[in-house]
Image 1 (cartoon, rainbow, N blue to C red):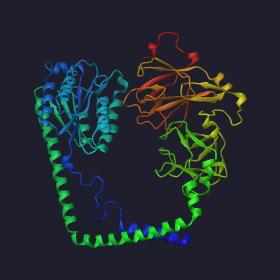
Image 2: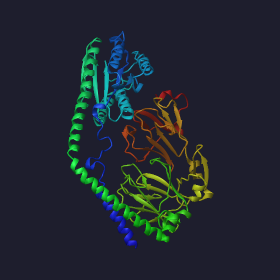
Image 3: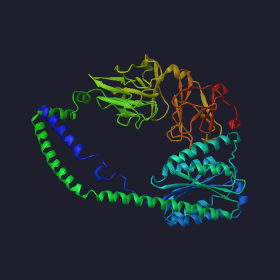
Image 4: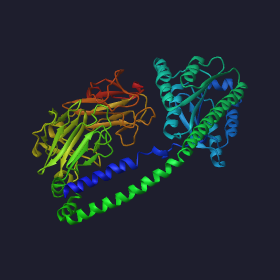
Length: 562
């Protein structure tokens, strides 16, 4: 009887596989397959130089009028945003449709910020900020453009890094534009503008470049740009119509075949109903199956044991996954980088199928699945294919991704236990130090007493704090508000890096940030801890900080570091 039920399920599955093919077969529509490219609108970011030299070349602010006319000519066919740059780049207006009076008025008011009062020309930051806006808020189906106008060369207060910034702009940022599909139209205003840079940006992004020798030429240039953008949209529209026509012709040729297909579906539907009725009848007669189902949802003995057995969790020490506390609610929890795992760790050094945690006979076991970069239990590499018994507060590392195993006693008490010492630590040798209102961290008394005072000196005042005391075992640094050190700059990653105190030393570790972490001008590999010494310079992208231990704390004003 069991074999009959099993075979019945197999027959149903094979028929479904044959009769109902994957989405897209037999003329089935795929999501977005018939989306007309001609329906796309253009997302356009204006990147305008606000340096003082512009006022000399455009004393009557004619550029404002040109841009205003440009916006009105598009009507509702485009969304616009605006970035203004001098020493730093500012998103003056996010992408928006200028279809109502209020939005238009706000945009025109923001144009007044183009007052040519800046001191420097930080072109790379301006382009990067525009790319970020298009990347995050741009419509996925829109044509994307950056219109960039400047009358100078890249120059900031840090002349030593200007060439480095320009290289970053020409190579890294243009490559990102190419991947996303952003085209840059560059306008070199006057002979003093860096025409070579503008030309490079345009060529590498399949855009275009123009010269405007005097302010009256800007109107002509914007007219040309509008023609290019309009023709691009028209070309996309014609391509979409051709594609649509070909699909309709193909579908019209399937008429006779559809009749036969309908008969097959009808016949198959009857067979499925009959088979399902037989399977349900057999299940109803088998009372033992129903009892198991009531207890565990057909999950078997291990699932029934877990209902009454100990509760366990994994605490994500470095916030790499979607939830800091992961309930181990299945007999076997698969862990790896691939999306089909129960615990997905989106880190390249983690294997697709890295390890498992298995529950059996009231205990939890960790097993490595022959991963490339290994699994570690309390600092010791475990051999592949061999289950290792887990106990409360064990530290598990999938390569460098750290998790703490917590049994029900700790979970019920709503404590987060992180043992930064050795395995033989006892409650008598430990104390509780509450570093913030949410997390209770247990650590050795000796470590707490030995932890020296340390600080970061914010050299360029990127955090609005000149000095930052390092008072936690792990100090997180990034753009996100949940970090301990918040650097609210677009080029800094949400979770950029952290500084950790362990074994009597401080260590810096990059968290696979987009624009890298540097220690004394050397780029740090992601997820590799580097020991710090007093006086080291740490840069989160281009924002430098000085690491100091207490014997080198400045006694007076820290402005000497800026």
